Amino acid sequence: GPLPFTFNGHSTIARPVKTLKQSGGDYSSLTQALQSAPDGAIVKVDAGTYLEDSNGSSNNVNTRLITIEPADGLSLGDVIFSRTVRRMPAEYYSLRAVRVHFHNIQWDMSKVGYFYGYPSASSAYVWEHCNFIDPNGASGPPHAYYQLVMGRMVRDQDPIYHYMCECTVVNFTTSGFHMYRNSHATVSGDSLGWYSAACTGASVWNYNVSQPSEYYSRQHEPETLTVESATYDSETNRTTIQWSGSPTLIVWSGPSNKLQVQFLTGALATHEPFNIYTQSNTLKQTVVTGDASATAAGDTGWAWFVMHADAFQYDTQGAVVSNILVQRYKTVALTQQPIMFQSYAAGNAKDIGFQLCIFDMYGSGAYQTQWQHHHQNIVMRQCTHLGAVFNFRADNPNFSVADCVIQDSCFGSMGSTGTFPATGVTIANNHFQGGTARGTNGTGPGDPNLDASYRPLPGSPLLNRCSPVIPFDYSGDALPPAGAAIGAVGG
Image (cartoon, rainbow, N blue to C red):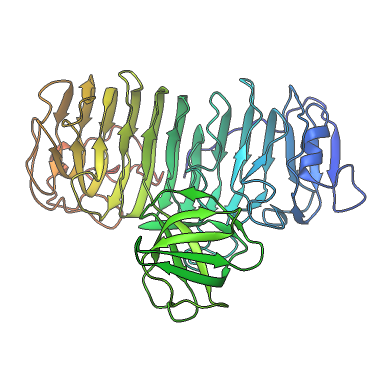
């Protein structure tokens, strides 16, 4: 089975026990417990849904982990933390203690945008056997419930560390953790990635992800907006939509084809979405491109931000992303970029290893996987990268590769915009479904001939390079019979 995770959340050192209850306990809210619990406390939580409508204002600078877990006899799903209103009082939930261990806790991600840790180099958060779930389900109401906020589940605040183990995520992005182990995400947004902040050490082991082609983040509260009036200006080809009541709108300025209004009722209910030009919370109005004057008072609609789901994206924005080990990471049902490196400055993306990973996607275009800027000491070995183009962005003036290795893997194809790199990357013993067989001992183009579990079938061009270097397959099962292929491409 999966490699076990050992965490000493219940050490033999005496730990004070506190209670969190709707009434009559030591604490009545998670925020209060995090702010007030003594060092090393175990906070036992009564069954129920707790509405965390306050982020608090003080911090608990504890030196020993505080554990938050259900009361004795309860199990995962019996304790849920949520809010009354989505993204209120803020998009994020503040973790008001320095070190916290969440165990068997469920979060309502239709209401919580992301988690914001205490800004300290000693901060650490362990999420063990937790659920992060949109209760509407993996296929819930279209568009409104994919709750992407800033492209991550936890705020990038390196060196604050977040560890996910044995967790389930539904309808939510999971970016920003420093460890993913034995976890599963269904209908995820960007599943791995670090943006704008450094990540100098992360580990991924046995993490399975399925992703939609794109997902939508609602840009207002309440769930739907009601039209008060619509005024079209033929000179600018824009319509100003005045919303009735007092909705809360996320402010946008400047046109974007990723910001859209879709009418749900009325004459424009079957019309394609209108692109947003600007949106003002003060004026309670949205300006869209095009003639939307056919909508009338009382019609309803949504305003959303359209995003595509990248499986693995580093956008360092000048920060260093390094010392990352990714093993047995699997993403399926993917139509966007499986891997994208945007490292900007030399040395910003380095010391990263991929092994026994599966990227199964069905997108199109030259940039589906791209190494865009500087890359140093990146190794990809025994990975299956189906359907997609693996592209070196050599046309980028900041592109470089140094001490990189791509070996014993399978690719949809491999190419380059600009001159294919002649140095800096060793490409050996790979198979290519299409295009040109790159590097030494490359085979293809042609079908790699894999079964439903991505194992090479008899006659597969991958079999001649398989070797039992790891005594288990991708799913953690024991080594197959002699001669059978193991791993993502059998290596």
